Image 1 (spheres, rainbow over the protein chains, first blue to last red):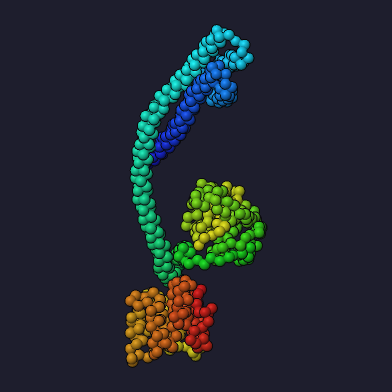
Image 2 (cartoon, each protein chain N blue to C red; image 1 turned 120 degrees about the vertical axis):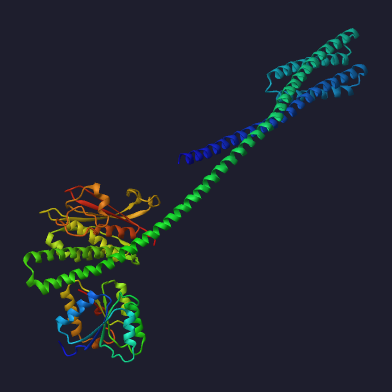
Length: 470
Length: 149
């Protein structure tokens, strides 16, 4: 049993580990694929930023060449290029700001860049204005151009550093990506491999246990078959034995009769007394055999189940027992009973046996009071019920009396054939009533039990399934 | 005893004791009868089928017999033209309903449960002998078929 248990927990542990591994693989794969997609986005982003910086430089150069053209020729056509370039630059700077909004260093650099570009344009605008109004000297113009070149160099520096920054970022990201692409597939493969091995292990364990189960089940089926067979044989045996035992017994009684009848003159009182004892014993044996025969007939008989009105049935039982009820001054209260599917003759016998017991085992000088309660209850209130019946509903009959009761430690014995709790001389009977009752209840797929205490009455609980399947 | 007493009684019974008790009953009832007993079914059928044999007026037939049991004999008797009108009264220890119906369907004219008391046996035989069974020929109604005490 221990070995079996550990095999099962082993299978459970392996399956659990497999699940964990699969979860890790899933999370890992998801995360890494997510990283890769993100990385691609970032690379595209970096390239865009770099491209936009290039564009800034080239547009600035366009502006400078426009300005230069105008300065040399005085042709306002060059100014058009110059003026267009400012608009283009504004939108480019706006784009760059948006693109690098998550990078403080870059944002800062772009602010500086914006400021420098502003300065460069101011210088160019002043120069263009002065030239167009012929208000400038040659040296001043060269000075202004020099200052302009200086600003332009600063701008180039800022852009170069910004580009370097982006390129560094790209380099780092590339490194990370390399580690992802080399390590992740390896881990996923490794984990998947382990999961597969674990699944295989648990598969073999389960198959092995399953095969064992099948063998055990087959054994059980064989045993049930054997039990049924031996049960049948026993029933057969009880029937044949009780039937054949009747023959010699009948003769003992008949010839005993003859002896008393024919030769009573020759017998003294003692002889007659002894013969009487023999006859009494024979009568008792006859009763036992009759009961046994009745019991085995109950087992063998084919049962015809039909819808039975228990109100009428119990009324007829009480009618049959009218004499003893009156002589004992018994009070019997019966609640409203249901219609149930049953074998009427067996139900008759069942109620008769239990009520008869209640009347028989009454206390001296106390008139019997018997109540038959009825209710529909769920199977889980029945002790030792088959697990498959737990959630079914049952008709519950409680037959209570105020009689002598019994000690509940004998509960199991009272339902066994010919078991008695009281001497034959105090209370008559062969001790078969409750055995027959139990057999009847079993025939109806039900349960019977009792609660009692000496001198405080007994209650017999009978449960019959509400929807009896035959 | 009334005049309609059968003269010729045949008892098929393997048990010597039961046979003895039966004879004692007849003796005590002082039935003037020609009593013959056979010990099993084979012997019974042999006797009934032998050509020179005078048929009995009534047959008391035990069910539980060796070689050929009472039921088999009954079926055979009812199938034979020469024998089928012979009144057959079954004697049995058992009072099982199935068995009683089976014997009734097979054509027996009475089913007597062997009683435990000699006195009862005497009463039964007396009442059987004094009833005019010819009124119920070939079979009485089922309610009157079984005699038990």
